[in-house]
Image 1: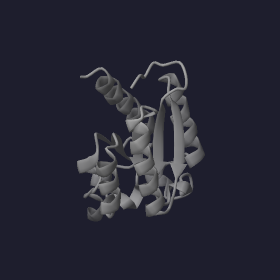
Image 2: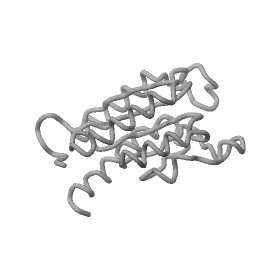
Image 3: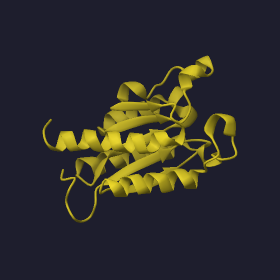
Length: 163
């Protein structure tokens, strides 16, 4: 995979799960005032700075997220995608299907949480995604998205250079 090819630019997939479409209005004391559109713009800007393009998607439906993860694994294998940033929302704590999709697709994935899930309710402390993740970004607010994209880019670059 070439992360420096001139056209087309490699893609980073940013997946947001259930209720993240409510960013900006849902519990702003926990999730902040930025909207999902703000987050997507931030992701596109960060990706562009790294010579990437960002494909941002959100779904409240587990099966759609699974389909996207499987598609992303194929795109990564073909060298068109460097991996995915996945904020699975509540599915983090319930979805064996998403875990299996990430593992089965061979997708390089960064798990992301806006809030510090470990400082919240006990049911949020367990993640089915963490064992399948290449890395985890937790508790940096929406600023975690650029951090996750940067980390994913570094991992993909290292992998492309055999490191």
